[in-house]
Length: 359
Image 1 (cartoon, one colour):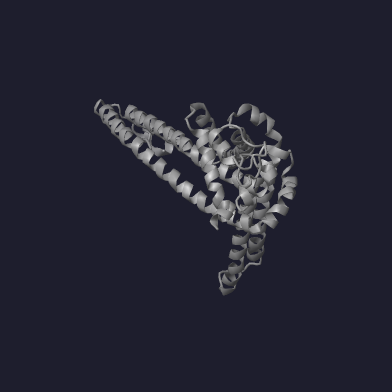
Image 2 (image 1 turned 90 degrees about the vertical axis):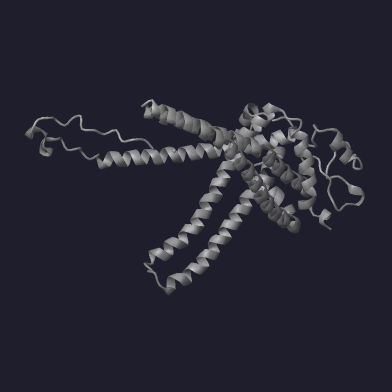
């Protein structure tokens, strides 16, 4: 029966937990979750050149008398490009580290039903760095597995020929397998390993050792969860995209009307530059508003998806139940975990008390 599958049974638990956390609306809680969602997720003008420096005399204004623009030093250009590349890499690394720490901040907030950022961020900095390191190793390992075959193929000097197409078939299969395995490993790490690290104060690899026997024994439940999570992610992404698109239309229409009116008014007054500045400011404000709206829209989606994962984890490993779930398929409707051993009234507790999770 579908109710015996954790991937289906967890949907109800996730919905109830999401409603309990987000309603009634607490503005501070929603904004903090929107900030967390930012990390974990869920642009012409007229030319200014002129002839002011061209003398008005006869022969003195010949092109041969004008100073030729000097070309930039190749070394300086290379240094600037290298600096930009290094800056982007550092920015991505810092963003990734913050995102890894925010994973623990999010799970702690969902578990305790009290979402805060500063104190949990400081407390989970070390586990976040471990998670970042694990993600980096998996990502680099995947790139290495994908890059080495390409280096071998093109290093042999094989030109475009039937032999190249024959070699591309196993390469495409290899790429698909590596990408799939990497996505599953990283997904299960985020969904199951992070809560394990937070609850039992383990490292990433140690948490994987803790979960692996259960995941292997319950491989059907795990496989169905992976598929269901993929489908759920697509559905949630589409829903969020539609809401953001609707919000974009609502914001864009008045911005276009006001911006166009102000631009034409400035143009009529002979100040085209002021008109472009006004349009640029309005466009920037519209983009900022859409970013904020998009993050707020992601809050219920992110909360539901993460509660869904935590519910499945609690069904798979009762000792890691952070939200209080009922395990389907057991006689008498036994709960996965209960602080008071109240197996029969787990649903009532969940409905009446929206606060205390089972830890």
